[in-house]
Image (cartoon, rainbow, N blue to C red; front, top):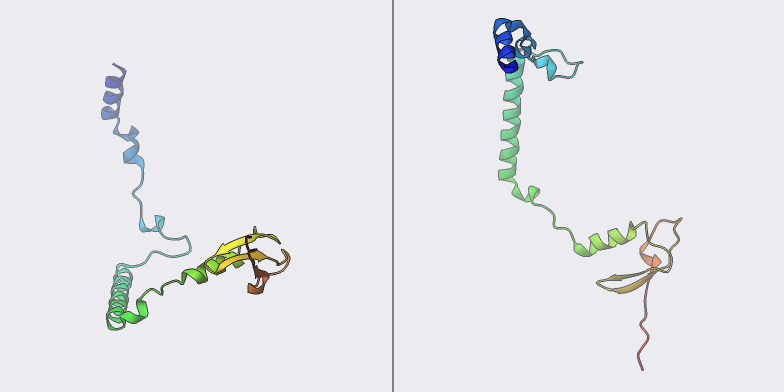
Length: 126
C-alpha cells in the first residue's frame, strides 16, 4: 500500500524524481579544470594526429622488428643483482649460487661488491 502511494506520488509530481533533476555530464566534467573545452575541429585533429602516429609506429615496427625484440634476461646476472641488492644480508651469511657457496664478508654500512662474497671451501670428509 505504501509502495503504491509513493508510485502514485512520483507519477503525479515528476519534479520529485531524482533522475530528472540531475544535469547531464559535459566534457568539462572529464577534463582537468585548467584546460578549456575543445572545439569539435580540435578534437577531430587530435584523433587524426593519434591515428597518424599509430600508423608511423606500426610501419616502424614492421620495417625494423629487430629493434623491438625483447632482450632476454641473463638469469645469472639477475641472481647476482638480487644478491647485491639484498638488504637482509649480514656479515657471515652464506649464499648458494650456481657457481657454488659464498660467505658474505661485507659491511652493512657499505655498498655491496662482488669481492664481498668469498667462496666457501668445503672440508674434505675423512
